Image 1 (tube, rainbow, N blue to C red):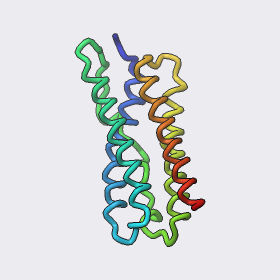
Image 2: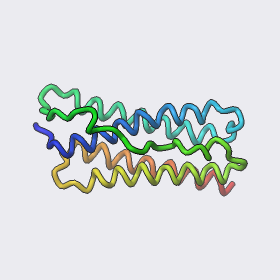
Image 3: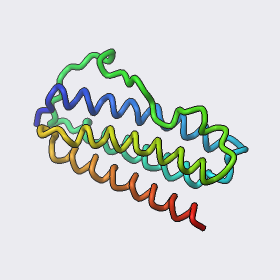
Length: 147
């Protein structure tokens, strides 16, 4: 199987954003002032690590042919969960709302990749599952806020 240049580039940029989001989320989790939201962040860290592993597994397939795309063409211009306001929230509701806003950015990028008609079916499944898990995390965050 061969992956289209544009698709590979989009997925590589997405992968780089995932890799950059993990340290941001870990920093949020380590901050002592944000202890009340640790479970909200932990679920997102686990999701990012899972999609990272799934994408690595997909691209390690020896029968897969990937085009050469220079690393300079795959740089992410914006990273997720890097807003400094996340580090200075006063309430769980505000913190959860900011995390959901960042989740929407992730879902929007996943939808952009899913909109490509040439996306291989296995990648489509990976991104659809990733999107639905993130939406599930948002739902559980909303339930937590109502309590």
